[in-house]
Image 1 (cartoon, rainbow, N blue to C red):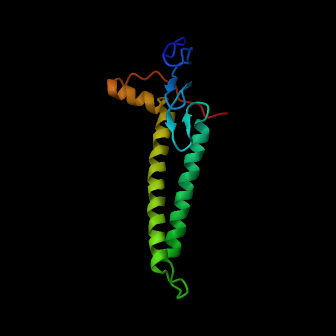
Image 2 (cartoon, rainbow, N blue to C red):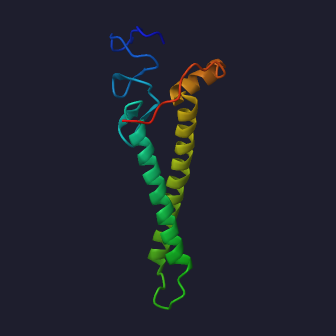
Length: 145
């Protein structure tokens, strides 16, 4: 993108490395992706907040798995007998926590790779489709307010 490129959707000038989000209907500087969890586009302005959101979600998933595992497997008292409903509930919450842990782990790795290389998810997918992934000119995104 040149510094004075026009957005075909907004009909305004857009910053370099920006993309137009069809969901938000606006151009976002250094847009990585549109996040349905945050209901917002992740770009240079809120990347730090998105990373914190991922780390907190990952930490809560780990904590819930440890807490469930401790209470379920380390229960040796006669007082802590689980009935059928609680056993099924623990299994369901364990599956949900494990799914959240795996998904947020992959998102953290994806965002970390994007920060280290300076290529956002959209740009990386476009370069991969065009087979120009080695022709990167982007700079890493600084993490500051």
